[in-house]
Structures are given as C-alpha cells and as structure tokens.
Amino acid sequence: MSGRQRHIGAEERRARLALRQRLAPPARALTPEEVAGSLVALHGTDPATVYLAVGARLAGAGRTVAEVERALYEDRTLVRMHGMRHTVFVFPTGLAAVVHASTGRTIAVKARAALVKDMVTGSEGRLTAEWLAEVEASTLAALARRGQATVGELTGDEPRLKERFTYGAGRSYEAPHTVSSRLMRVLGVEGRVVRGRPLGAWTSSQFRWAVAPPHPELPPDEAQQELLRHWLAACGPATEADLKWWTGWKVTDVRRALAAIGAVSVTVDGGATAYVTADDTEPVAPPAEPWAALLPGLDPTAMGWQERDWYLSPELRPALFDGSGNVGPTVWWNGRVVGGWARRPDGEVGWRLLGTADLGREARSMIKTEAARLGSWLAGTPVTPRFRTPLEKELSA
Image 1: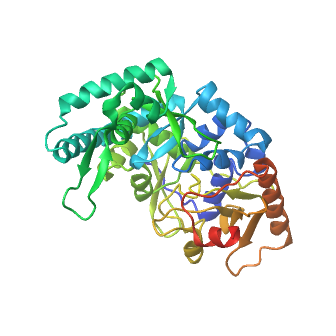
Image 2: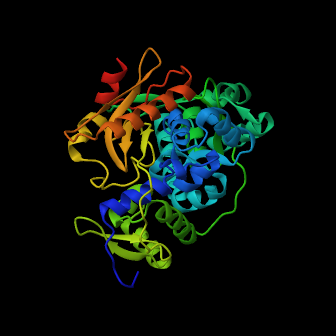
Image 3: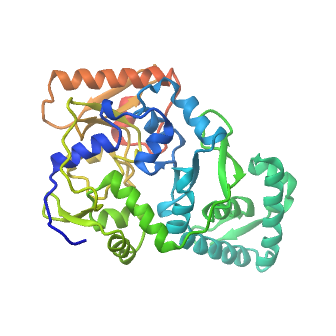
C-alpha cells in the first residue's frame, strides 16, 4: 500500500462508476454474465432487482428476462446464493467458491450452531443434533433425486421436516419455527443448496431449491484477497469503512487483505484515505457523452459504498430510503442520484427529480428516454419493490 499518493475527486469517481458499473451507454454489456462480472454481485433479496439491474446495463434490454433466466437456470453461469452480510446475491458461478470461503463459512458455523441450540431448547430435547443430521441427509438425497424441489415437495419425501419447535420461549418474540425453513436456510448459507427457479414469474420471491454445484474449498485468506481484488476493480477507490460494510468482515480482515494484494492508498474528497488496486492508479476520463439511468431498489451501484455523499446528496435520502437503510428505485444523471421512479398502475414508468438544481432540458429528455426503455421491456409486468420507500409509494399510487 506504499507509493505516491494521489487524489481521486468526486468527478473522477463518478466517471469510474459510469464505465465500470456499465451505466454509460458505450459501456453497456451484451450479456447478464458481463454485468454480474463487472459488478461482482447483484443484490438478490428482492428477485426483481436482479433483472432490473441487468436490464439497466444491457445494450439490448429487450431480452433481459430470457437472458437472465438462461444464465441462472440453464447455463448456470450465474448462481443465487448467500454472500456478504448474510444477504442473498447473484454471483458469477466462477466466484461461488471465493464468496463462500471469504464470507460464508464464518456465518454458516454460527447459523448451524444457532439452529441446533434453538431446536433442542425449543423442543425440550425432543429434537437432537443427531436427529437433525438424519433429516438433513435424507433431505439432501431427496433433493438430488428431484433435481429441484419446493419445500412442500421435500416435506413429502421427508415428513420430519414438518416438525416444529418454539423459538424464544417465554420472550416477547416467542414464535413457532419449522425445521424445514430453518434447515434450508442453514444449508444455503453453508453453500450446500442454492435457489432454483421461482414458483411464479421472474418477480416471485418463492423459489425451488437445488443441490449446489461442487466447488473447491479455498483458504479463507486467499479467498478474501480474491474477492477484494474483484470489488476494488469495480468500485475503487473505497475506504476501509466501505470495504468493511460491503464485505461484513472485521476491519482486521480488510486491512490484511488490502496489504496482501498490494492495494494503493489515495485520498478522496473530504480527506479520507481510500484504496485502489496496484494497476488502477491512472486517471479515468468521463464518458464522452452525458448519460442517464433508472436503477432498481437495492441496486448494487446505489448500495455499493457506505459513504455515498459523492453520488447521493444527503437531502435526497429521506425520500429514497426506507427506515432500515434500503434504497429504493433511483434516477441517475452523470454519476449522481437525482430522483426516483416507480411503475404506475397503468403500466407507465413514472419518475421525479429531487433537489433544487435545474438539470436542464437534455437531462430530462434522456431520463424520459430511459424510462421509456425500461417500460418497453417490462411490457406491463407489475413490479413492486420489496422494500418500499416514500417516493416510490407516492409515484406508484
């Protein structure tokens, strides 16, 4: 992390964002795989986000749904799995082992221990760890036979999955839990199962399960270094706080990985120290033409950094975020968030600019064009973000 330190200001950071996040039209991708590879991870908590994030970055967005489904369910070049911060993402399949080793194992150990403790305590010892091991083996065997299955289908094969236990007995949050829901979640975090095709349309949040494809077991340190290289290439410069927030790692893990890959320190506006990869120190020029984009709730660009003032003014946040810090649909102009959008009941994509600055006729025209492009490939499909925000609710009313 030594070497001559230079300053990367907000304007250059927005230029990097435009090109590396595939948002400026000349930088748009041809396939979902290219989009995911450029962004490292697509938020998958809201299933629609994956498709909308890809569609915003494809040169030909008309086949977004078909192309994403091909990548996820036919070619399996993309995989939906648990990753950073115990959150579901869609990753390039080639990164599955890296993500699991760098972030998943630690979370998985805690998740399994919690399940066993809750299950044994909540059943007064009736359900044991040994019993769970039998049910787990039987469930995985049934899933392997079926290829893909819903939880309901698996409980038909293994009725013990229907067993219940009491979570938080005697406390205000006491609730019945089923073995099936908790076990499948743990197996997902452990990287042993992945989500398959949805039960309904591409916006559905109900998924089938499938046995995870095998991948090598990597040393955690090496995996953390590899994940950090990929993410800094897409999102650098980034501060330690950004990296700790995005990965969910301890700050000591972040610092060790930065040192191991020889990351170079730079300064950003506000005087903070940030980092880029060693081969990414040259200035980056902005796109030749201005650009606009409509990004979905939880989009990986809008959620990419903990410190967001360089692309999102603080006064806009109350309208664009929910109470838990989840970003809603956003309108972008030349690397900055300038408003929000929503799909209206009549199928049109409505949008509104926020703030006091007058962006001018060109900006409004290009944003209108992007809204029409989005509305065209949605083709009337209802899209409601999982985490609703004040402006989205107002625009969609």
